[in-house]
Each structure stands twice: as structure tokens, then as C-alpha cells.
Length: 119
Image 1 (cartoon, rainbow, N blue to C red):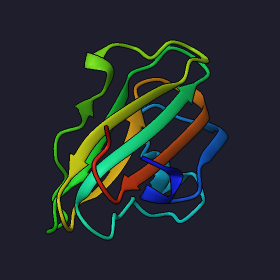
Image 2 (cartoon, helix red, strand yellow):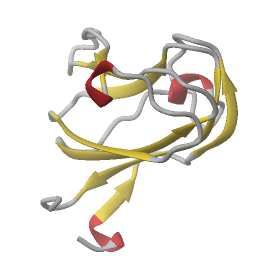
Image 3 (cartoon, one colour):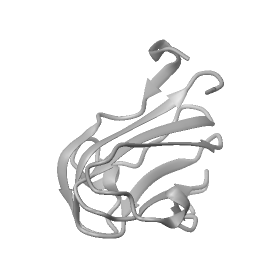
Image 4 (tube, rainbow, N blue to C red):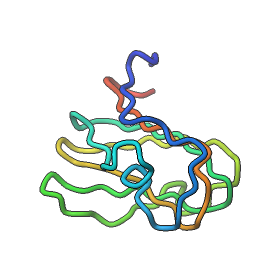
């Protein structure tokens, strides 16, 4: 897969302090909205945090109902200042955002939608 096969869903979050439990893309000041992929498909998110914390994906269905926050990294804390990449699917019309379980600085968070399969 080349970079041309990925659509960046919003401006990356870079060195942004966040409180525990806040929706990262909805509150970090870029768009003040959840991520809304133009189609369903495969999402790739790359993230690094300043301190150990769990990362959760939150998906809202096409009717705006929020689902249960889902733990990434098997529910384990991400290590401080380590880069992680997660791949998962979202359906057509769904919106998503991410939350952390502790107050941290998000060193980097980039969310992309794959145009094709991710190997």
C-alpha cells in the first residue's frame, strides 16, 4: 500500500495536552467534530502518548448513537513515547473518535482511511 492509497481524515494531533476521557478530535481544535470517513472501510491510526494510558476507539452509528468505547492494544496501557499503529474497520455513515484513560500529551495521532486493502 502506498501513501496514495490512504486518505488522512483530519489534521494530525501533535503535542496536544488532553484530559482523561475527552474525545480527542472533537476537542483538540482542528474541526471540533468527530472523524467522519466518507465511506466505510479500514481505518489506520498511528499514535504516541507522553505517559502510559489506555487508548479507546469510540464509534457512533449512522443515527448518532454512541457505542461502547473499545480498548485498543488489548486493553493494556500504551507505553510512554512509543509509536503504535492500529487497524480496524468502520461502517458507512459511522463516525469515530479516540479517548485516553489518563491526562497525557498526545505526541502524535494520525487517522487515515484506506482506499483498498491494508496488507
